[in-house]
Image 1: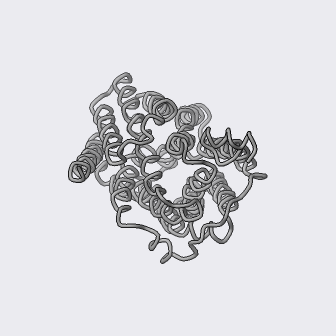
Image 2: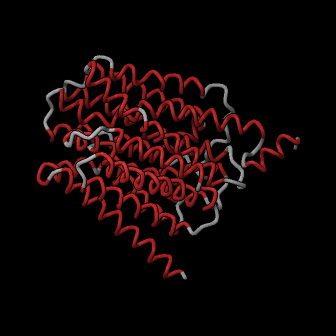
Image 3: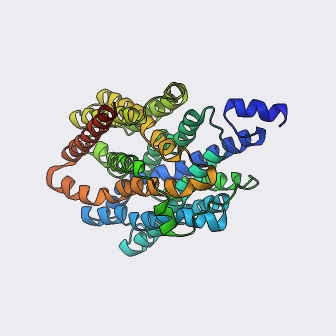
Length: 390
């Protein structure tokens, strides 16, 4: 091993070349996520196109069908195509589905077809990209660097919703989808030339499920609740803030920058902390942030709620992902990561549909408080697990 490789291992990477690969993939994720973050405005776009609340709920939630199906099979696809090629396929599908909404968003069934293509890309994307990032890391700073990497995906929410909102309000939807997709195309180009890794051995759904150990059920439940709470921010929070005449940046910029700052500055301190307590703290802070946003009608308390939410969210996903990877070599992580992301995506993309009925009957505030209650109860459950374990 060269001196450069030895230094890279001390810095948290498997070798010197992995440092650059990790950073390029992180930038690619940021650029693709800029496009994905425009989905926070889809409820607004569909509403302006004349769809009613029930139709909007279906268009937002139908995404879950291919997402959940292909997330389960993402380990098998990565085993056949290789992780890097799976990422490129996923990014391509996301771009095609999003751009096609430029022409289909006004008609229910064509828009549904576009959302299904998007969902196929999302279903393959998250597990594959996290598996690739983990494969570039040594154990020296695994949780910290994984937290920084995973923050690239939602980091774009600090920029995309205000940018997309400005484009919608100033120019209408004429260039909304096409302009939003341009950074993602650049992100896709960055993935070419990267080294691959040994394909994951899981080649069937049965093999993926058999890779889960008994201790994985708690993180899977945590991932579902995390996805359910976060799913409201991507599906309905923009519409809820528009109804209050609150600038989108009050929540989205505050939450995303606090999340990124927390992962970048504080995550390294939690490398050896108890996973259950970290998840409990994270879910508790997310719930508290929702309560602040639901209870306020002015910008500054919503910004404080956004900061609280962002710090909480910064903890939960990377801790759960590292929990699922404990004790496994990189070639055996695709299956457990697929299960984790299936649970997360189930909450993220299925919850908007039943929540649409809560919103229709009781309003956005009641929906946020209900989700905050779910997060708080789950946080208490993880604390109880820790106390029982001693």
